[in-house]
Length: 360
View 1 (tube, rainbow, N blue to C red):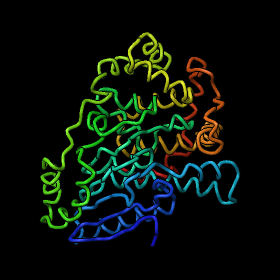
View 2: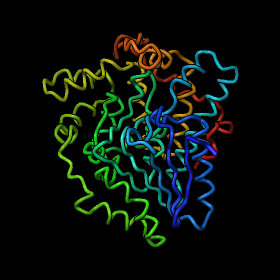
View 3: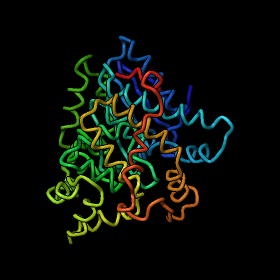
């Protein structure tokens, strides 16, 4: 039993409740293992035909991975830390793949903060539900990292380069923009969440998703989302983020005196120039990859990331010292050489020894 992941069943529905509110449900290795084990058990259990992922707290579904742990391990402790760090990412990505390829319907209640690792365990769900409290993002470039957990897969496929905006600016979006980008399927009032378990449990096997959709389409449940940042600026967004390299994207944004472009420039000025360049290359490669191929690529990228110092500096600045003054390796995107980007994609293992070689 893991107190941070509560597993239960009712009426043919398996329920996983993330229960680490003091850390906004940031994923630990033990939590990843508990979720994975429950999903594996239910996959082969004929009495369970749908799985629901939710949080015990209205503040967050899941704010990501435990980056304090990442920093502590990568800085030299505990003694077995490097092995635990390797295990964390291998098992997290394996879990992401399991959810994307799960043979039974899955529902993710993406209420509150949904970032990083929280996106990883929700984007593969059959139905992704957001609310007026949803704050979604993939802000890894702000800590000297890249959008992993399958981010290459789902961000490269987001509508009209909205995934590129999310990945490179690290902006946080609401329900309207999540729907626009194709990163959510339904937007409902948070008050409607309480009845979801009952609706699912009472529905006939094989009809649970249909019953839930009907419930969420009721007037007292639905949110009529106003047009968000993406919808109001989609032509400019697509134009700017369609350029092939980061200096060109930045030059395009700087030539635009609109509010959208100014905000994007302000956000990107705080991010790691190196990791924005790496992320752009990740998205370019991922657009023609399967989920398994993306996760294998990202597993290599994460190994290369922790061989360097950028991620340690980013976490130090934002989470440890909280001075918000990172000393990035490069002052600007123009100073990032192609070989510095390419290093993140150099295989770390032979194909037969890759930790995720068995994913398909």
